[in-house]
Image 1: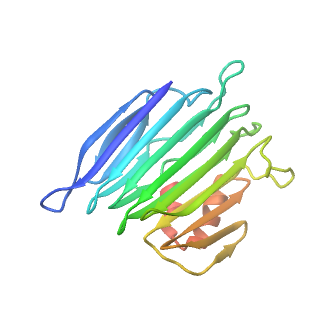
Image 2: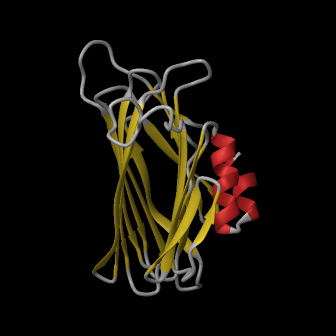
Length: 238
């Protein structure tokens, strides 16, 4: 199934955020749930192997946009041989974008590719959080690959790829975490390095990136919060 979501946030003459474009097709519906907030609502099971979703977000100067989802995304394998499922988020940020969907759960035998590509203008603010859990309770893990590219004022500041699950080069049992959480932030410079138990925060030009691993998702969330010093993260993502 092919899915396309498009949201544009714009600042009007009174300084308020308006959303002139809010539309979706395929596996998602999108609903405005607050003055500057939209939620993604799944309209079908999945994603399944072979599904392809693209989410386009444009936040113009002076506008604010928070993107959430109403439930975890449960990635399922298709019958027989099929390509991986894929979700691409393309963001153009001149205002402030806060992207924090619910976790992605990759079930046994499923393969999922996730990509974030963000272009941040001068004065833009970006916070993007990803949560991944490999396998449901009592189930073997699926495979997930996440790629993040961030460009600020035309200059690349982050390009990273993480592969987890059976067959991923860096996933070597017994050191094979089933839960992974990461946040990338632009517009919140923190030049120092912060480390914790299976967690680290590293500086970027004008921002930072943090990652954490654990056997359970709630532990990974707590570990990320310990290095980002953001106590609200635990409440928001649970």
